[in-house]
Image (cartoon, rainbow, N blue to C red; front, side, top):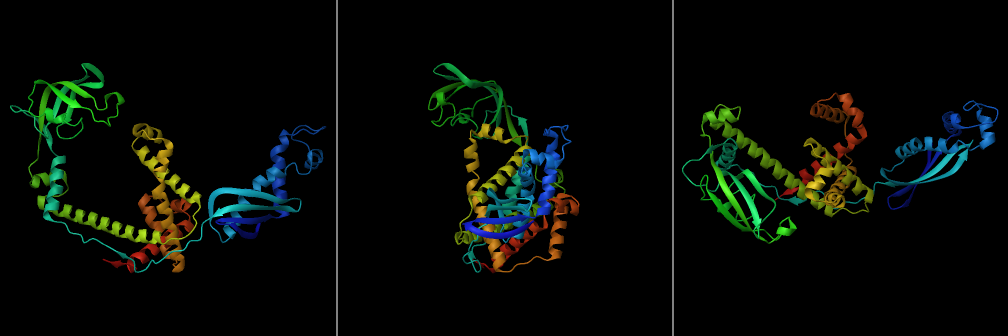
Length: 426
C-alpha cells in the first residue's frame, strides 16, 4: 500500500491517491472468495466447494472485487493519511475507485484535514493577575459555615416561629374556594427564609405558634410553571405542628476535633487559611490564563471545519453524560427535569466548544512556531503521572493514550507556559 499523491482541492479538503499493489489485492480477493463461496451455487458442485476460477467464470472476474475493496480500503486509507503531511478530521469522505483488477487497486479519497491557522501576537500580552490575601474575617466566615453545617435542630417551646426556624406544618391551597392540584401536603418541613415557597408565604408563618391554625394569602407569580395558576390569588389553610431552631456547636478545641483531624481550633483555622489561599491563587491563575487565551483567540485567523466544532460538542456531551451517570441519571432524565429539547441541549455546548477548538489550534500553531519539542524523559514522566493519577500500570495507560497524542498535549502545555511566562502582568 502506498500514497501516490496528496493534493489540496479545497479549503481543508485534501485528495489522497492511494495504491494497493497486486499482491495485496489478490490476497483480499482470495479472502472475499472464502467468505462468500458458501452462499454461491455453481452447477455440478455443492455449495462452498466450487473452485474460485469457476465461480469467477460463471459470475464474472470482478465478483469478489467489491468485498476486497471494502476490506482493503480502511487500512489503506489510514496508512495513507499517516504518510501524508495532513492531520485528518473525521468527516465525510468522497471515495472514487479509479483502477481495480489483477494489477491492483487505486482509489482517490477526498478527506477533511486540520486547518492551517495564523496567530497574532502571543508574547508580551498584558493581563491582570490579582493579588491574593486571606484575612482573619475570611477564615471566620469559613468557620461559621463549618459551624452551620454541624448544627442540629432542636424543638422550640414557648415562642412563635421566626426567620431561620424550620417548621413542620400541614397546608392546603385554594383558588376561588376550589382546591388545586399539588397544593396540599401534610407534615411538610420548611426552613423559613429559604425562599422555597411563593413570595410572601414564608413571612406569614413567622409569628405563628405550635398547634395554631391560620390562613396564608398569596398571589402566584406571572411566570409560575402551572399555567392555570399564573398571576392568580390563592389562600392556603395551614396548621403548624412543630418549630425547630438551629443549635450551633460551641467554637472550641473540641469542635475542631469533631469536624477535622486537628486537635485545636487554631490549627483548624490555620489549615482553612492555607486552603483558602490555595483556592484563590488557583482562581487568580485561571483568570489570568483565560484573559491571555482570549487575546490569542481574538488574533486567530483561519477557516475551521465545522466537523471540529461538532466533535468537541460530542466530547462535551459525553463528559456531561458521565457526570450524570455518577448521579444515577441519564440525558433523557435531565431533559425531562429541565424541560429542554435535544437541540437546545446540544446548542448549550456550542459556544464553549468553539472556544476550546480555537484555543487548541492557536497553541498548536505557537508550538510549531517556537519549535517546541518533547523529550523521551518528559514522555515517560507524563505516562508515570497518568498511571499514578488513574491507579493503573503504565503499560495499560499506553494502551489507550497514544504517544503521538500525548506529545501533542505536552507541546500545547509548553506553548501555554511560554505565553504566560512572557506576559506583562498588570
